[in-house]
Amino acid sequence: MNNSINPDQALREQLSGSADERKLALQQIFRSNDLRTMTFSYILKHGGKEEDCRDVFQEVFLLFERAVREKKFEGKSSVSTFFIGIVKWHWINTLRKRGAYTALDDRTDFMDTSDSVEVSVIDEEKRKLLHSVIGQMNERCRQLLRLWGLSMSPEEIAKEAGLAGPDMAKKETYRCRTKLKEFFDARPHLMEALKN
Image (tube, rainbow, N blue to C red; front, side, top):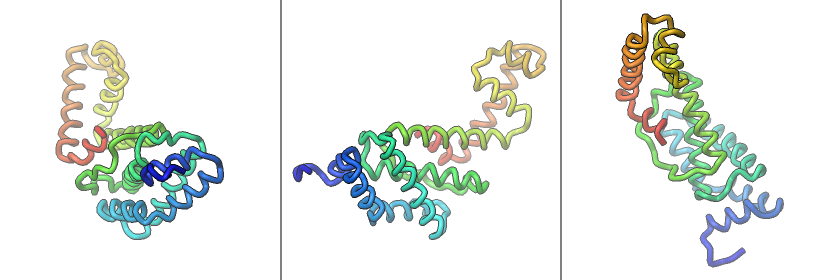
């Protein structure tokens, strides 16, 4: 390994190297006090307990290891950015499953870029979060937002939803979109989670 490169770059090179190099790099990552500390800090700050921290760290390590094995970690971000990005979305999904995702506070900027696996993990978590929020709305709004999300025209929405016409479809869809916006306005951390 070239000694003039920074440790993270060296680690990224090991992760894309031979099987033995990858194994050594993964051992180093698993034992990394920095990654463990950042993971624990994030989880504890966002409503988790010590046991949650350990579980999330181990589960995310397995996701990370699989990404490396399948050559989906492309080294476009630092190892810690990639790892903690997955931690964040894994924890949001855990809270969502517990029905406690609204307990999230201020957003922590651990991510500044993403590799393909992180993007797919995050995109899936965003879809689940949005679906969960929409699921709390009344049945009519759920239907209209689903149709609107499919880019249907007001005419198609009116026909599908049994409304009087396109003007009524526009009005009702707008009302539901406003309700959704108000929900997120009252919970800016969730809006930030969807944007980033």
